Image (cartoon, rainbow, N blue to C red; front, top):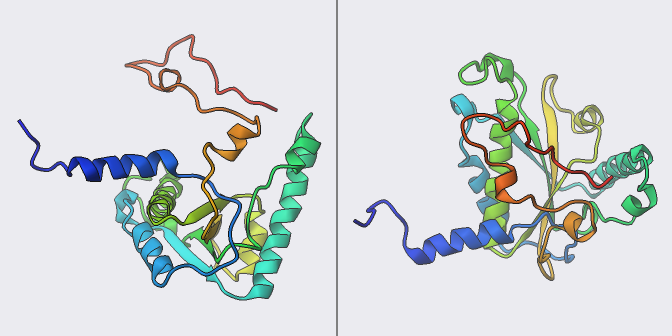
Length: 224
């Protein structure tokens, strides 16, 4: 019996294509987004599910070139600190491009709103569900961007307190992502960190269990 709620096979295939081809992009062409594209991506984000319908996401579009430069400086500071923290692959890590802040068409900072502690439904014992909900919003943007042929990269190399001060965020608000968005020459065939030898996508059987956690389940391997 056919499912009357299912999409057409063409639509299903398109969804799966976006899921498989979504990439964390770092290389951008220096040109503007198509008219209305950023609005559509933000609308996609705002359609995301949120625990207790709290909608904890807030988006700051960065249009001041000087401010973009100061954000880039914060990211560069953390990139160098991360390299120093790596026990054996410092120089190799420094060769990996981690962001496209200076080249992307649009820069958007995503933050958790202040006053989140007032929302108890679904997060009384799991307060981090505000972060999980906002990650869903970013994933919505990522998939919508890929469907439109637009690159999006999530940058997490920054000190949250420093970025919050720079953007005059109220007490309690927390930045969790700097999103680089813009046209690209091509999408990476595989995740960049996989190609650079920093990890691999685990087989599904390594992450799907039944009933109880297996005693012989292996931890996630690291390459550094």
